[in-house]
Length: 180
Image: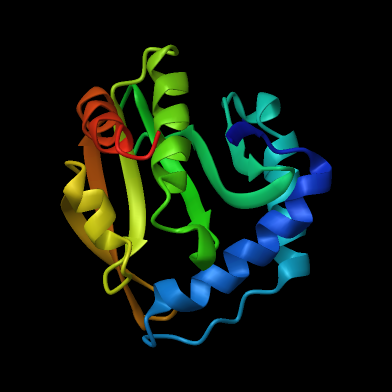
């Protein structure tokens, strides 16, 4: 049975190894993966531990089966330039390739969305590389591209999606039924 739970400091090393591994796929050959597991680990552990001082509510969740990590998702309040009020950002969603197609990302998303709905949040922003296979995932569940930015010195086109949290959660939950 798949369990969704908060990540611990101990889990973060593996979560960052997963992120770096998935980043190559997300880049879709448009830029070189220059991420370092150690630098990502330092950044995200600091991010995990600095929510209160930044007036943020952050979720770092993992999907586990028999204590084996299957995937992770990170969420936080959105910057006001993305969503002026009542918004969250999906800061990351990564699932091991061998565990895709099992509803892992759906379970993680439902958990994140439900959590922030209880905090009164209404919209979600998602930054995702334009050519990444995961772009279709967000479109399928109602997210719409509102603008695009170039990152990584102009090499990487990034789609910025916005979606209504409640609508997205309902859509994902409907699809999730076939996995549970």
